Length: 161
Image 1 (cartoon, rainbow, N blue to C red):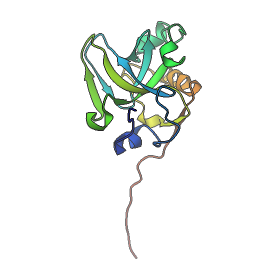
Image 2 (cartoon, rainbow, N blue to C red):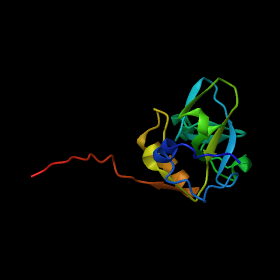
Image 3 (spheres, rainbow, N blue to C red):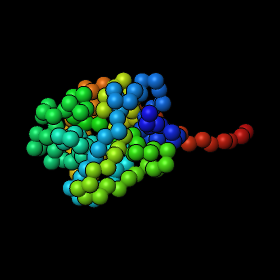
Image 4 (cartoon, rainbow, N blue to C red):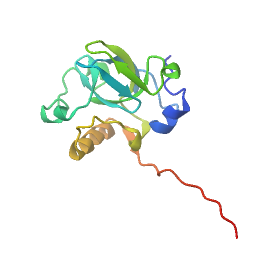
């Protein structure tokens, strides 16, 4: 079985907890990702299903109707979007992975719930606009991913009388 949460920084950046709700091939899977140009995938990257592989969600995906299609979603149990939560060997791979152009590589994606994900940990392409971002988050929520708001970092200060 693939381990998807062996590093503390994975849990702290995107997944709320390493829970029993994570079931391989039910709400997460090791699947192929492929890009037409060299691309860097980051833990928390939001990706979309493109016939037989995942790709980074781009602003054009919202205008070309790519996110509204329901064709060829058998490999994802009907999910259009997913969140990258690891790579082929998460415990050894770090927080990013560079994909060569037109070369399929394995990524671990979480595509449906029940799984709690920190909204602040989601990574979107730089061109995605605020309304598109809201649309993508709505799609993720419709797939059962529970997007959670978390408090910002707390600064501790000590003072005495």
